[in-house]
Length: 266
Ligand SMILES: Cc1ncc(C[n+]2csc(CCOP(=O)(O)OP(=O)(O)O)c2C)c(N)n1
Ligand code: SF4
Picture (tube, rainbow, N blue to C red):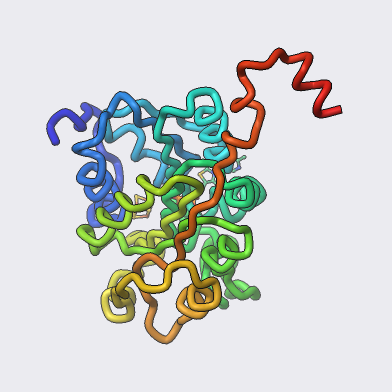
């Protein structure tokens, strides 16, 4: 694990859920060929993860971690490209990128740090903030219902869909490993407390439970589980194999001339 450490000073607040995500990710990749791993991040507290782990990384603009990852994967399909993004980053600023990456089944993994608010900017509401959420931009309470990101991913044809929790590090590590080894678009929503602006740890400790894998190719079953809200299930909800984007896109035709490819397209 030493080889994954960096000299950056960690500025996350003590007990932030991001520590759990970093620890689980280090364990998940410790036996991988690290030269073949690239991570991209958005902008936010989650994005600092790039500073705290010694693998190739790219800080994107806010909301643009996914298209950067897609570009890297298309340029070098041998790389394992993993995106770390916040709920503000990919469900507000960059939501269309998330939908289209899932839809085209590009072979990348998205780790969604869902702390249910914009944390780095000190607590504004996002698409996943609960109805009535009181934060810096909604002092009277947000008058909107939250989006369920995994329901959106199922509707967008993602081929691997899972949820974990940053304080259940072993579960998160195993889920990340499965997501990274999946061939195609994979997403892991990580429920994670922002202890400074929305401390959900007691709530999640009491209201989450781990499910076993079963009938992973059933959309109907996946949707039912993903929407369960009385207690929140953690685990893999959906996994199917479909042809990946790079097989179908121009990269697979690299033997042909650009003129020939353009001819075909026109
Ligand atoms: C285009 C753009 N819009 C807004 C900002 C300001 N900004 C920086 S970080 C941030 C919040 C990030 O929230 P989230 O993606 O949920 O990550 P978290 O900090 O919660 O990990 C915002 C709004 C920015 N840097 N760039
Ligand atoms: S503000 Fe919230 S998300 Fe950001 S480091 Fe502190 S606890 Fe973590």
